[in-house]
Image (cartoon, rainbow, N blue to C red; front, side):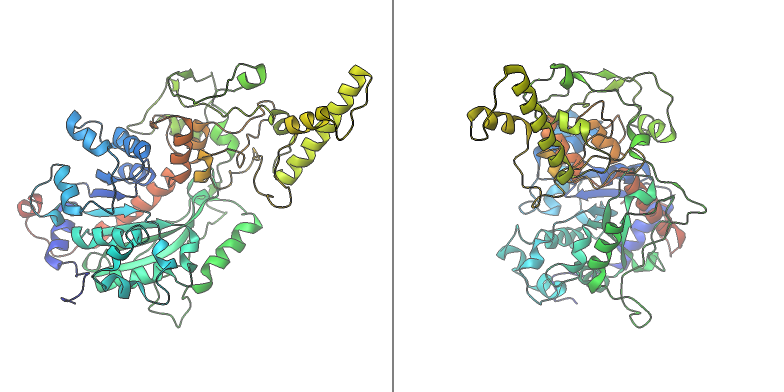
Length: 509
């Protein structure tokens, strides 16, 4: 093991960090590939303390610093708010820039994040630990091996615990089960590991979002890895179960795979769980937006410079939680309740039924087109030929240009009485995947509504203008899911008492 690139977690160091936490100190968290901070938000709410992050996108990096490190002196805050390239900054240099002195491995208790896994499209049949052990693995393709870079930070900082998040496809990526191979490597380093699939809707998030979560804790500190029990229940649409089964094709499971790391996803019990939070539950207390239908919305960048007051409303439990999240309280109003300028499509949005996707939207658009042609004909008394310029102009102003057969899922109108479908980073380019359920508003969701569907509290600040903010929200881990995982991880860490050093010695770390 001593000749390997990745070295074991020293037991004495693990016990020191564990003792510090058992003495009542908040576990110190470093968030890699942090985005605007969905994981940080959940972990801080569960009693952890974010000490910094690494994020390449400038707007997301500033959002993270504003929300988690704004109490620092200005000069140090600006260091945190600056975008950072994990392929060029070393863990030791990062912590030094944050003002931490002495051995880097002393300062971080928990590393969290969702590293991209492009490396696995390139490594053929090699196992992750074989690739990781090659001294030039990272140098050969730094941007393709970001997953290895994440593990490099783990290796250098020796955290007591680790959380990784990724899409379900990471379990069957180019013939690899990336989570399984990561667990093999982390086990060699002295961690106890496990991974599973969790859907955010089972943890109070008004969104059906499935992700892989991997947890590793220093072996002396825990007997086993488990995951949180669902608090909410829903009868999931058929497509979600099919997607899960595809992802699980390479997973080792069953009695004869006693050394496998996969843990069956905890099941929601309808008898004791609350009903899933719906889109209406999440959004109905927010201000109505109709200015686009009144000709008051113009094309151009949307800035978050105007507070829109909350309307009088009887708040449900979810809305209360979003307005009163500790540290992010907001009883005034919201600045990022802004939407896209899509004048061609308002009439289509209005006609769409809940659950309609692009083929139905296209049908509505074609019907609208024929109605407008007929109206023009009735007004002018003249026929409009199919090859005429006027006919084409009406078509272009009414019907979206996408082939309904090729883009069936491009649009979708939300159902008010169901959780939303998965929000994606593509929100930064358009919002057609989440058309508001209220036909009277005839629009796509606002930035703040997207944040609500990701369970981000109303006091959470998003840096930049509308498109970057949409992207940040779409990329994030839902905060309530992150909190559920973090709370459960905290309970695992403190559940088993290990041999402790003196409190004074632990405090020095």
